[in-house]
Length: 340
Image (cartoon, rainbow, N blue to C red; front, side, top):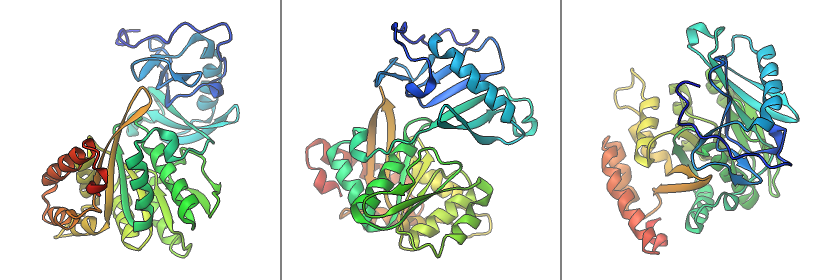
């Protein structure tokens, strides 16, 4: 177990400990081809409670047999795709190969994420009341709500909760563009349906163009990680729909800067900043602490919004840190309504 001396062991399992992965909660399962690396799991929950102070633990031994069965399915299905889905015990898993793109046939391991069927609302996630209310209002404004944070911080869970709440509260059609879907939220949600579309990263533009006549009110973009996805996401947000998208970033300002970097095209002299300024509605950054979200929110709906958008147009993203600090201070003083 070289290199994993500091990874905690999950608490000793009780006599009735679960023996199937479907009966526990977790974010990611790590299967390695190196026999010295144990099976690892992040954000493990047993009986609904976090199993460790840290995000990563060695998989409890009672689950080892089931994990081996799942690993055998992954090995049998693995071709040369970097990502694919596999079903095990009634649960779908998104499988991502840990390997160089040039040597995909020699995978060092796999990261497996559960694609759960449970539909969670924003109120279920433990968000502060002021933020839940603001995210609900964001669904009526149109534009782009960007959800940012580190890996395995619950970004997609929050984005899916936004989409389901918007459809249930405001009515209309919702659609997701994901590679592949991480939470199964397709179906009718009281006042409208949600359709989930599995889209390969290199087919995003074609999928968006094909959707233009679907007349949806809300859309979720699974993750922005290419120029094509960033550019089409911004264009969708400018078309009148309300869009929620995820992107990796260390904070709200950093998330916006990442969006601008992805959206920039070499042959575009002015860059995408003016379109981002027109499209953005808010930026939510979140991390997880014992599976509870810790959030920072940068709103573009308040009285300072025109000046904030001007900073983006001028490429002065770093100056938005002052606006974030001001809004955060108001919320800390119990004056959250003045920060929107």
